[in-house]
Length: 186
Image (cartoon, rainbow, N blue to C red; front, side, top):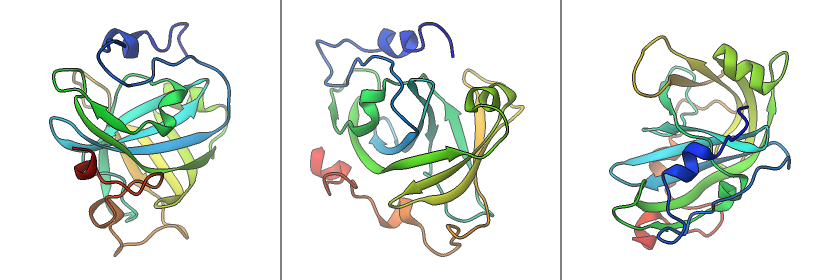
């Protein structure tokens, strides 16, 4: 990871105006979080703890448990580890203004050879999630589409965590920490 991994994150936020953590980088483990974020549009922020930060993607439709569904995942700036349990309201007019809840959280393990940092650089990261709403193997694959931000695909592998019928992103809107929904905070 780069020397100042959180520089882009901090440059978009004013700590006097938003309750979001400013954070520091430290090694703490292999956690993941999926936050349901109702900002300019409702989306899910998928974050993996790698090398002292939360490496982050915006997933418009949320993670799917169906291996036949590939979900767009747009790479965003790294977030501080303190963000792993952040729930609250980002004020209107601020970057990402809207409500944020912890939709799912847990731990993950890297399934590939080498380090997760190597896999990110190579554009193919494979992980096994152990969460409340999502579990099992997933791949994040960088696409060749160019744009302002890197575009990836989040793909569920066909394993014991796969379920072609269950749609938790649509049917389970509540936080695994507080039980609140985005609407409860708004």
